[in-house]
Image (cartoon, rainbow, N blue to C red; front, side, top):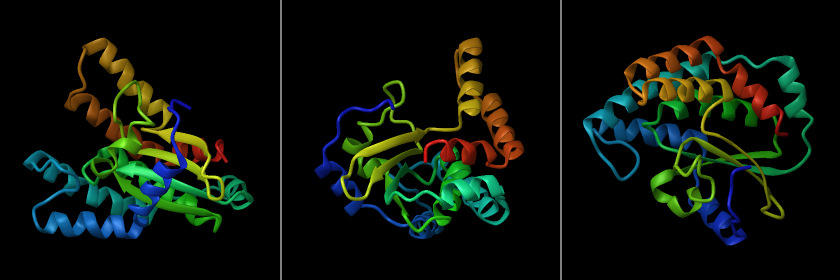
Length: 202
């Protein structure tokens, strides 16, 4: 895990500010209707990405399939945990992976999925940086009783991370070309790699 030491108080504060998956979806949709996005920064670009993400979220909520193997692994997980996901509505990786995390969490009553917004929880986020950056989504798995951080996942599945890394090393930038490649990867993978990576952590 690429983390720094975090106190129980900081985890408790994040949980107090957290919302459910459905509340997150409702909030993103309501803000979009008002011409706004989640977080502190407002722009036409972020509004455009939010519009795309609302469609992605809706599609994955309807079409995502979970294999029997994944169901068995997650259903049999007996530890009571919080799954705290750091997210924002404008983030493309959130739109592609948060519905998968939600679907997995739904399989087990011991998993309490909560969403926190990055811009409202920067101190919490800073314990779970990716190569020094506030990259989202980030899933933090926490024991419900001790508040011990058990595992951390994110910002995206490993093959998708490699796709971006390889492109950036070759071209020096992350541009629309590789963003389209990433979108195609998510559409082809259909959430299966994310599910496998999550089951490996439980």
